[in-house]
Image (cartoon, rainbow, N blue to C red; front, top):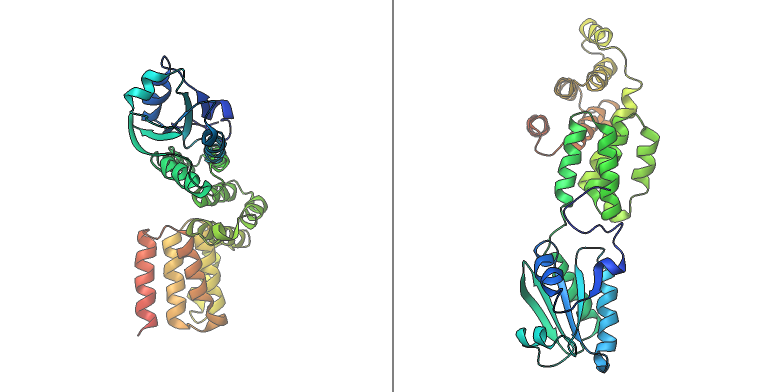
Length: 303
């Protein structure tokens, strides 16, 4: 399991996330711990009726946050100094600590919806728990050709956050890089509807389509000779673009498709434009090839 600099959702247990503290452990379990992960402090007592309702609600919401927030319980009967220092005048009282300081809180029993909102708000203080850094590292691995390591990293991120479209798309692209096209397709097909519409997943789907095309691409030299022999041969131009892309010559492929679009934009139901859009979608939106290609395509469309 990767170290993301925050509690691990995949391995964190209730005892890791929720614990009883004393005056002797408050500094370590609240003040110091909150410098890395937000900590909710529940001041309670065994004789407090509302505490018996609020406590389980807090614990359930903290557990559902999967490591993005921790919770400690302070029995005020046995830890009066802590309660006094934090001016706890009635119970239940709940504080949220972040970076060693109380930053939010409430007193008394509140509706379950407010409890959930409080925990969600507190969890958000800690950001994504380092997952963004892990995604960046995985992308670097993939760019360097370490597809297996990238796949393992993206998979670990997904175990931490199953809703991460960046990790889902990255894992699919890592599978594509390893030539495991069927696995990539199955993974993309398993994406939840909201995730399936994300830019990251759509980009991976476009890369998968291009990878499948590459398996049938012909030799570049032969196709270029065909185009030179008959510049009006639309199919040869299109096949040349596929071959160029399959050989990693993406910008040349885009140029070939733009030439085909200029020659006959309606050929094969607009195949040149459709292929261009697939290539653009597979790349990052800020890629110079995309920016230049889209400008040229737009100028042709609006001529």
